Length: 317
Ligand code: NAP
Image: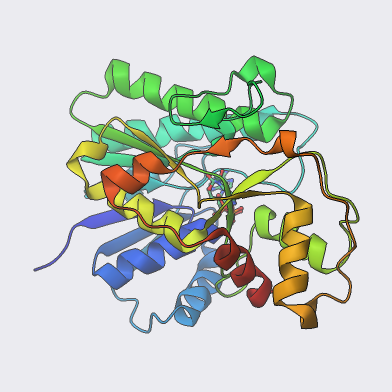
């Protein structure tokens, strides 16, 4: 039986291409949007590296989050939309609106087009950025109940993800009659790179530690999750009836500092560690917890370990 049609926005991105790959493996008819069709070959190359030899079930559409052009064509006829695309640059731009406008207005553009097209459910890729960046007491365990207050943060990327997720929930609660929304909030995404499609998380953490550019462990820790598990969680969230109207944090079990990542690489990949700096550990007070229990229990999601996710990025690089 022919499976349903799913649109993944941003198939040219690290998470986007892994999500397209898994949907094709499951037998869905898949569409993906790219900002420019010149990216098509890079996506096909990455999928081929992931083992996809027949791409007859995949089609490409050109659409930018800052313009209405192309979205109606990409979405009409789809059963589900996985809205993964959003700007994730290596560093914040001077003008925060460069990120906020595509993230927030782009999400609303996709939701509106999906509603008009009669899509059943949109799964939005938000971020732990929208969950865990307002001050909390030491030892706090972050869950889906937590929200970052945009007024508490300076960084444009964190604001862009928080404002986009808030706008999406407002839209669905006020105007989204008949359509469902589910949100995924990943922590730092690592894991294997397909083709040449890396991301600011892999390049900004793993590559910098490997080549010795990171000399000290900054005073912060991060959750880690494997890109394959985040793609899998999007598909589980797309299908599970009880996921409607819910947000799910995507994280493996541990949180780490740059020091921890450097140690892991030195211990497990000594041949790649020549340039890895000797860092000092950071104080334990920075190690707040992040719970993955909601996705684990409600969606039977079983993420790979933090170590496996990080080492898969090391091996890809
Ligand atoms: P990525 O590789 O940089 O992917 C971002 C994708 O968004 C790319 O396909 C990019 O297209 C697309 N995009 C950016 N601006 C756009 C615009 N104006 N119009 C249309 N498409 C646009 O990063 P990623 O890690 O896969 O990120 C995917 C999603 O996961 C994002 O929503 C991000 O916020 C979220 N996320 C990532 C992490 C992480 O650690 N990586 C953690 C939490 C959440 P181009 O190829 O044309 O640039």
